[in-house]
Length: 107
Image (tube, rainbow, N blue to C red; front, side, top):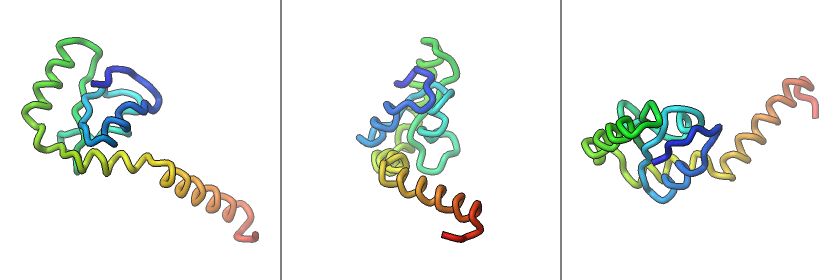
C-alpha cells in the first residue's frame, strides 16, 4: 500500500519489479507507475482517492475481488518500463532528435 503523494515514488516500481501489485493513492507519480485494474491493459494495481482508512479499506476490497486480473508477470514487465537502460535509450533518442531539429540534421 502506497499512500504517499510523490513526484515519482520508487516504491510502487520496486514492488512491481518483485511481481507485487500495488494499492496506491491516485495522485503524483503513482498515476504513471501503476496501471489501474479497471480498464488498463495488464493492470498492476488499485487506486484509492484519499488518504483515509475507509478509502484504503475500499481499495483492499476491490483488490481482493479483482486480484486475478493483476499478474506477477504484468507487474514485473511494467516495472521494466522504468529501468535505467530504457530511460537512457529514450533520453538519448530525445536529445539526438532535438539536436537534429536544432541543427537541421548537420552533425
